[in-house]
Length: 387
Image 1: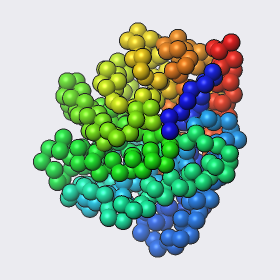
Image 2: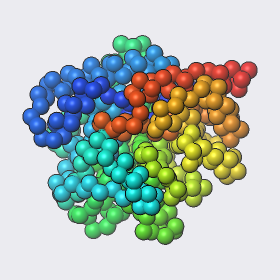
Image 3: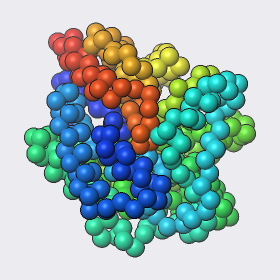
Image 4: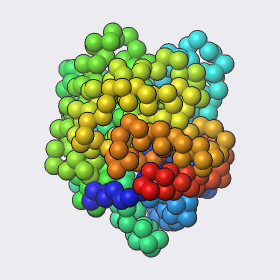
């Protein structure tokens, strides 16, 4: 169901939350091929989701999720749900901003969560695995999340899913004749997951780092026009995949990369936002708190936001152990309220707190305190904006 806006600023986050330490160890073992009791893993994921849901409710977050507890990564999880990914894993992810700062690159690459991720190439037709058609992983995720939310007395939920363009960014194409053919095959295969999330009454969040981070990674060798053409194709594929879901039940997340690099090669939002607006989701989440993108409220104020779009800028930064003061959060929200009316504004987090299982960079306890500050700051801003 669509999230109904009220006379206050609603809060949410981007997806991944700090997973319990014991769950991280089990998921790492499973990823390394060590035999793991499947029933015990499923049970721990279920209990972890209940814990993560309750902590979000306690923090005061309005639109919550399962913290991506069942997924080893926001992108690479699809290799377990789709066929075709049997090639050699590609572990070298090139960020052009890190090329100039090798010690920063070393810090990023040595993060255990990133070292554990695995993205095999696409070497065959991409389809939904037969076991996923009935009671598949997406459906099980939704049953678990809905049960936990109901037990916590909370009903506004979302679930994030990799967009077709994101999957193509992580899993190299070694099968399809063209990138366009590949991304549309991904769109049709991922449609099952998107529709399963929507059928469960949750908002579907489509993760789209390809539209921004892609500029200084996979698409770094393209000129501006070719890059824009590539992401326009990705959005066409995304729209094809969600054709059966109402726009109000969809949201999408832009991302320039959740890693502690210099980010001086990040593409400006001005170079991509006109294409982003062509995507079907009615709500767009993007970075707005970190030092590289905090200024872009002024860019959108100048360019404008279509009347049918709601925006959810990040007002909390997930890479820093600083806990943002609620007053700062409120000021950031009020600044964004000069870009769109408050009724079309939500408050969020720049990116996930743990996009890969076991990713280190922030104290898990601090992450929860930051979410509480987000809720407190939104309450302050709401009193002023809706007075």
